[in-house]
Image (cartoon, rainbow, N blue to C red; front, side, top):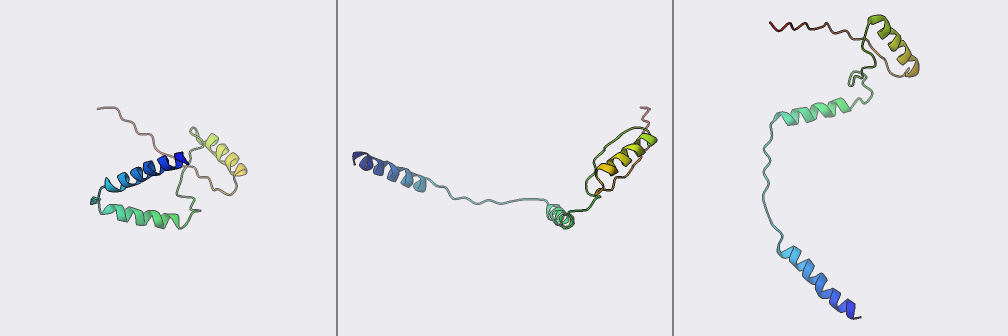
Length: 96
């Protein structure tokens, strides 16, 4: 019984102190107008979750014949995804 009596004032003190020391404020958000455009674009992209052109995962890097073999192996293991071969011309930066 005595602990209940000492616990009650402590709880009362804690509750009143949090209420009495709370702060009020105003938050203003300054953001680029293009953020809304990007959010709309993301919503549009999320409508079609099965879009195979959205994400790219590189499974091989090397010569063309080995790339075709890697593509065939991937296609056998994961037939629900359509792999593709993309070639990028080397960029020779000679530093001149």
